[in-house]
Length: 197
Image (tube, rainbow, N blue to C red; front, side, top):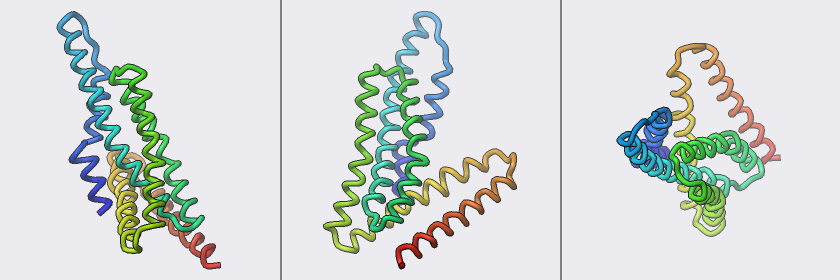
């Protein structure tokens, strides 16, 4: 369920990658003269709208991944989730900032929108903690499954295919992928032994 939810948000509802591509292409355009000045204004308005849509997509993603942190029951689970979130959250934030800067939006508006995005993490943690504390075990398990699906989506649909678009160093990439899978398995087994002891 979580996989399909994030797929819908990023590819169907918002098409976050297309927005980023369009904004990058628009950032390289130069304009001269009065007609091109009007075109630039329209492009900036479109870029601002695109940045806000990207904010919406990343906000949903941020809430869901931080919900997982709120649902964590053990220190080991919390530590693993915190590490995985810390490894990619800064990249998302920088991409969002770049999108807003390229949109030509006034800086006070950029600060307002980025402040809203900053609040999404604590909202997600609060939702996860509330579900963990007050909901029935079936609701807790369902939320955990949805959130786990979002992590599978990021790994299986976002990161791995992007790396394979460039055929250079394919063997190194393959062995790095296998090494990453083995490392995650080993860390998971280690944390399970810590919990059982």
